[in-house]
Length: 388
Ligand code: GCU
Ligand code: CA
Image 1 (tube, rainbow, N blue to C red):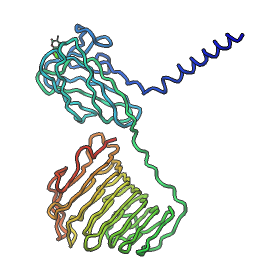
Image 2 (tube, rainbow, N blue to C red):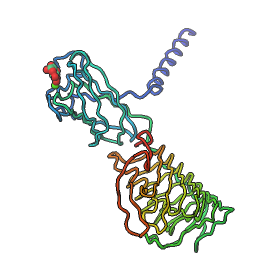
Image 3 (cartoon, protein in one colour):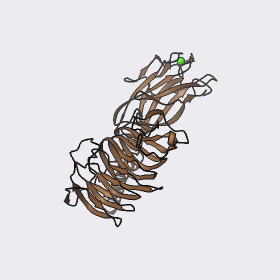
Image 4 (cartoon, helix red, strand yellow):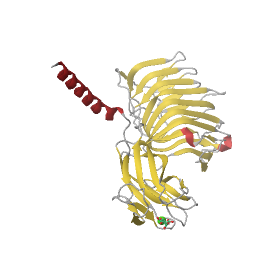
């Protein structure tokens, strides 16, 4: 009796352990064999070199562009680790473009493995979309691809951040611009609404005008928001949320070399700009999120008085649609520094991080003179950007 109970108990325990272990372990990668549809091989499916998995491998034609392609599924957008198993019995590496959903994201080189029957796995990390993704290896030399056995895909643990927008604790009716004194205004997470007609008219009144040195905090700005927030000198916008930007979320003016800080908060639906920098000084935007905008930050391209302006954008999450992160005037010596920028919903990496212009003070449209990091006006490297 007693022995039976012990055995039964041990059996139960074993069952529990077996049931627990798969969920406790890391999710196993999904294997996509090169010889199995919907994978395609520009060449033949062979089985004459031992050591492959499945029923064969892709022997690509010895030609540039003779690609192999896999269709892989990801349960969520984020990073995925790819394990590419290959053999290259020659002593010459065979490089290939790694094309994810139409964009070349890396160019791995498949070095000689010593023999056609010696298979090795090369690991790379890429961004994938939720759902189906095409992953193509496109050889760039006349030798073509190495022999390809399979692609292992392990979806990473970085789902796109779910923007958590605050729920208003109450409503405040706005009938005209709210003047915020130097002592500041704490909105207690109430929604302030509304002003203006929601258009892009540059002449609308702001909902808040901050005296130099003021802090505006814990405010949800409803729509229409007029011309948003105007800072007339140094200011801090802490935990301010624009539900629908309308014209610009905030405009920064002043004299001397003011420091402006936007810390926390978010903005949605800016038909044009989110942050418009018209005065001199330095704007820091941090711990912020924005979605659906034209330009996240712009140093005024054609204000009647022009300055050298600086912007620091750090720890922000920007969700497309969105055209440009920052626009600066190189002829006035502007600088834009970017770090910790997460870009969501941009598999083809079309959002321009930094657009360079020659600005003017005549009111003419400024002319674009370039884009991208240069270490002088547009300061960042690829490690400052994360695509999700
Ligand atoms: C040999 C080998 C093939 C390989 C080819 C190549 O023919 O048997 O498996 O694909 O070389 O150089 O690509
Ligand atoms: Ca071949």
